[in-house]
Amino acid sequence: MATELTIKVPNRAGQLAAISTALGDAQVNIAALAGSAVGSKGVIHVVVADKDAARARRALKKAKLRVASDRKLLEVRLADKPGTLARVATRLGKGRVSVDSAYMIGVGKGSRTIGFGVKDSRKANKALGR
Image (cartoon, rainbow, N blue to C red; front, side, top):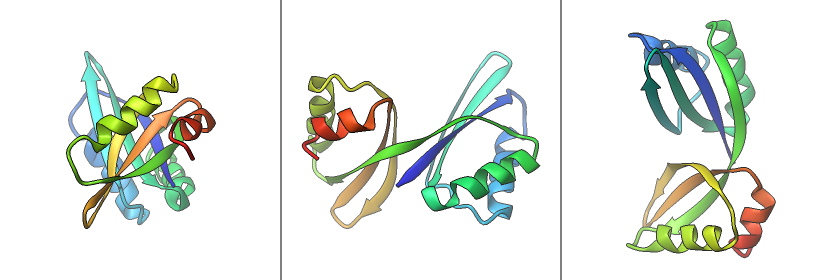
């Protein structure tokens, strides 16, 4: 399992460096990352292994970086073939599961692992036949 940490920062130089340095110094590996800025505010989403989530939160707090939210990601392994993501996304849509975020969090021989941020993981698992 993986955990998505959402960190809100001012939109200024050095924020990504501060986040990645804090996590690196704490020996937390970043599995996936996304970020955006609107005006004077930035939002960075960092995905870490569940086993590292508490350590990541502590390291970010120590660096005076605020974790605005965190959640577990639903992990789905897909064959590395065209259309496999579409099939999973269609099943989630038909199951009325809202996907708030998605990250490629693993690459294997012939497969990819996608982490989905969903509000209701039980409903998502049901939609996927799990």
